[in-house]
Length: 364
Length: 166
Image (cartoon, rainbow over all chains, first blue to last red; front, top):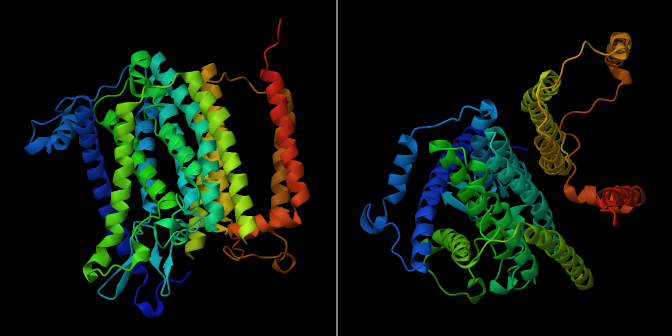
């Protein structure tokens, strides 16, 4: 692995670029999370025929700021009977892991600025001939997600409260069960792309909208499984049993307050963003425009912005879908949840793998 | 150079985690330090160029097997372990066993360089594709036999978990 050579990019530049990209990414992600919360409240409010937050700033746009100040200034209560080291570590584990996975998401090809090629991805660099990214990016994201269970499991156990423990046990069982279906649903996409690198998976879908895995690759069954399993993984309605307020108060974060609670909250929304990004990359052509094959003349500046534009439009759609479903569906019962995951999604995912590999084998 | 530094860091984390695993009195803490060991091992695999085993180490061992361990500990609500004076077998066999182990290590490591094959870190980069081809072409039979073994384990679990009809 050599960095540099003719394309005037040495190790120092690489490190500087990486740090700048990471800082930018964190800033954008956390701002996005704050405004997704506002958007959720607004959209849900409109769906329920209410106004939602509209007092702080124009249209309530400064509400996230007010929420943030409230979280920081609130008294941070640590109950007496908690197991302190893990009680404090659990929200950090949850938040850190959810922030790490976004660094593996490619947002577009690369920008050429002042002679430097800058790939739009925190963990990729230009090696002189092309973009070098982590070639098992998808597996690493899956690994980080699977470790994320510990934030939830440990918070519930260390809180030393019945509701918290029940919530975290539910969450643990749910996350392990749905991780199987989630992992298997991605294999169809991997067979089509022949790679675990997110960039190569997106490149395999370049061309018009008909080359996207969802349409051209006939992976809509896989997409359905993925989105269901991902909703369960992020503990969102209709799978939000770990924090079902009617039966468990607030589930695993019952005993948390102030910033520690906010960390769980932020982790959940960061995971939603990651799920949206992955759905975009794997099934909806990543940063490619749906009009790619049509050769519509566009100004040069648009070529620079277009990947980001399409990527964010698609991710925005998935975030909206999350909120839409939250406003629409009721919660599963726990046995229904398990039956749905193991008896329906898992066999369906395996069938999808068999059919996809059969078709690919016939074609080649 | 960078490889060596990274190796030392992760090997250190690995050994420290393993020691912590033994020294902690609470089962949850022990389980957590085992997870740290597995994470560090995954990093060592990655340094050796085995990217797929590294990812699987995290996904399967740290992310699934250990979750079940932690689960069981949480469900049983196991308390702080009780200390005994140590079993007789351990006190008789422990120290000689340790001496034999270190002697063996010393004997292996002190052999002349020419007799040992040496591998530089990063020499054997194995892409996932190559691993898959090896598993499903050359080693298909052992691979399938292993999966039958897992099938038997699943059947055993089903038999154990099945409710008897009265």
